[in-house]
Image (cartoon, rainbow, N blue to C red; front, side):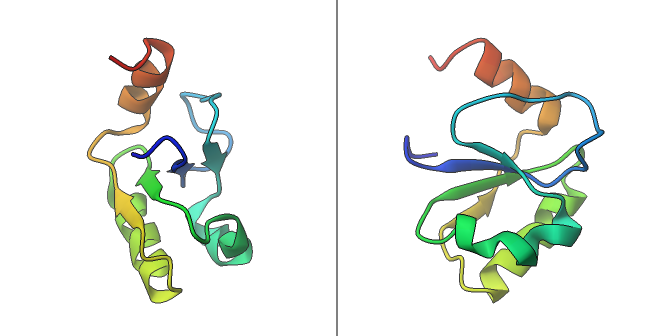
Length: 88
């Protein structure tokens, strides 16, 4: 993910683990189309808890013209650990 890219968490706000980071945004997959303007012209790495919602979200993003979006292979816990332990 590029430094100006965005980590997009498509889980529900009440799901664990909670993540706090720069360039991080949480939008539940069922509300994604309401917030597309936040994602325009950015590289977007999409993730969730198991991968199912991130795949659904990626399909929505691509259909709506967000071409620089991709699914992260890491799930929420791995993303959180990566953020907390720093980039190497």
